[in-house]
Amino acid sequence: MKKTKKNIAGKVTALVLMLTVVSCCFLGSTFAKYTSSKTGTAKVGVAYWEVDGISENSTTEQTFGLTADKLSPALTANAENKFVNEVASSEYTITNNSDVAALITVNALDDFTVTAVENAKYNGMAVSWNETDKKFTYVEEGTTKDLLTLAEIKGAIKVTVSTTATPVSGQTNTYSLDAKGGSTTSMTVTITVTWTTPTKDGTTPATQTDAGNRIDTLIGMYVKSIQQSITLTATQNSQIPNA
Image (cartoon, rainbow, N blue to C red; front, top):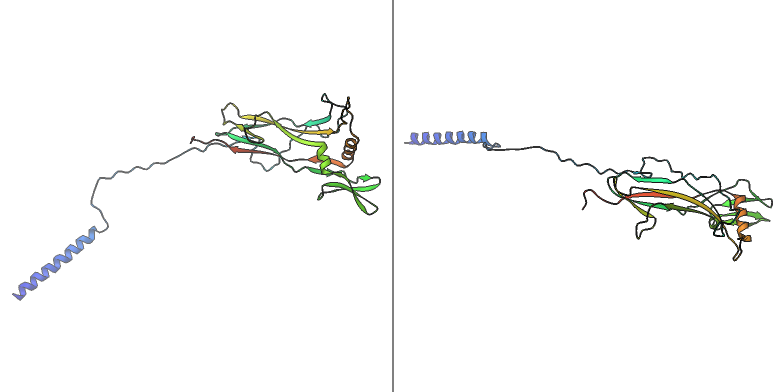
């Protein structure tokens, strides 16, 4: 009887061991089933951005060449009885070749720069440009005296910007260009420098004021050139696809 129990126990132990081995073979695996799969890609084009005249990949600063190298006061009064002389740049064209519309902002910066005539004299005394105080001065008997200020120069000579485009309503110096293929994709910018001499009230034909003539003369004697920066900025103004 004891032998029979031992035989049964041995068979049970062997069966458990065999089942354990078999189950280990199936660990980490799955039974067969239907499966399907597909691999694909998603691709989208990038809207092109290129505003000719602004967005060139260049570190070279743009120079707006004027139609004359130098400017003087007007010799005679114009049709409006004013002494105004001017020189302008050639038209500078901006064209939007982008897939999206663009806003163009045109500004003349307030960085009026004066280059002084070298070795200039006033009644035999050396004249210098004080960059800090923005004026021409000379020294007489140990005292520094003002001769010509930046405000007086800017009062006579002005840099202005004009365009062929219509400004965006409610925005200063900002213009809209359609995306490529639209009705309005180009505009031109013109830089104008004017020299105006004040005139005496009620004189016909006009006559210059003494103060105006004095400032004109001092500018001619001591200012070699003036320079002012113009900025052109293009900003995206539509999206693809539309929201």
